[in-house]
Length: 294
Length: 254
Image 1 (cartoon, rainbow over the protein chains, first blue to last red):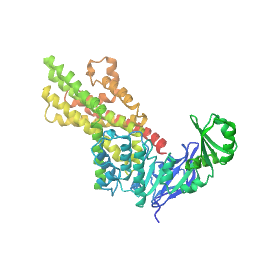
Image 2 (image 1 turned 45 degrees about the vertical axis):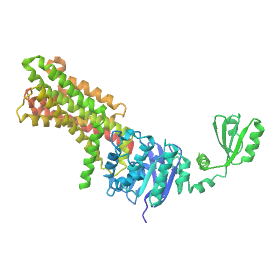
Image 3 (image 1 turned 90 degrees about the vertical axis):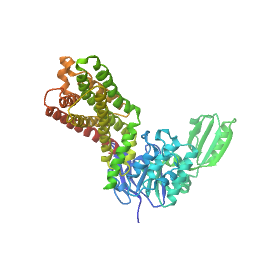
Image 4 (image 1 turned 135 degrees about the vertical axis):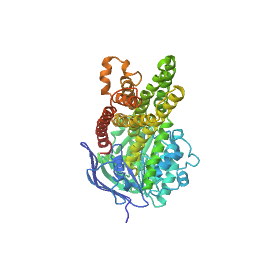
């Protein structure tokens, strides 16, 4: 049995802060695992460990049962990392040619261009590409080596809806062909629609793991939306309220008992309008989960 | 084996194209030495008929050194700082790329660019400045100048690992320009105040310029002394670069 990626009892410290605390998970063939967590939860550290970019203090990181710290053990892995800037004076085709040369069995060039949706753009300088196409080129560099494991760190950050869906489409196709994916994302919708399994980490520990549906059922709560003049502090203090966010006049309240909270809201604010009650989604689950631990 | 060679060659090709298409690199490193040479070596020199070719010859050596040093300092210092600081190096290190290919390409690029600069200066000197050296002198001058790029690659590497992506170009300029002036690359060292003449040997460009001048017969002294001085500086910069590299590795990949 071949395990594309595995962290086993991994602990990683930076000085006195613990980035990962005895974390274990595996990613199986044909599976997409999304790693969710607030900033500083340890997502990037986990990604870097699987790419062999960081030393660990305890435990083991393995890709296809090998140590990713050795460059030659990374030939079956493709990675998309967040970068500030890439060399802008190289053409799309030159970037792909160079990265393809790092791997023993790269994909044929036309296939890379098609998969990444860059056909016809080989001669464009990277600096001339739009944001969406830049991201697509980084995706092309991740898949050009014909990998069996993709590690994607926030692959669609800053993209518009169309560009995001385009990348999702390619990620789905990769998984359908038997590829394994580790994805970190800020967009819970992205995790919800792509992931077979979600791992929620917070402060370096795994606090929940399961399918998107399972994670969502971890919270039975509801989301209440309305326009109200009531101050957020007052709402937070109400019983059964787990979280309050305000965006202008619109307030969103997460609660484990929507009936009680709605009654209270209506009693306190006669001018309350646009009332809406919906079931909690992944976002609520995520907020509740990370709050429980806090 | 063949595929590894291909990685090295492609890495060099991309490094070269990347820099060659960047006006911020090409103009200060290639255009400035050539322009200065045209102004001071050829246009100025032709006024004083006595020693016109002498000036044109002398300045090939010193502007050659100036060009080589610029190509190495910018090619290494700025590009290492930028790729490191903005995350591009991290993307490449997540692949199976051997790190030596990345370093190798930068050294190759600095040597290649240095060769272009020296070749262009030589053409200007021969066809516009009437410079005439014995046939054996040209290849020797070429080797001395281009080989002299190596200590400055090490210095650039050191700056690239200590400096951030935004401060690196400024730091390189602050090192490059005063050091070049004080080493007599713009104005012959003999015309400088005595005090400056005594501190010049502490600066590495001085030794590269003197070496080139000895090769063309425009300075006296022992070439070996200057070669040893350049080697010494190279070792010093490499040691410091290694310290900076280790410090960065510990922070980023630790």
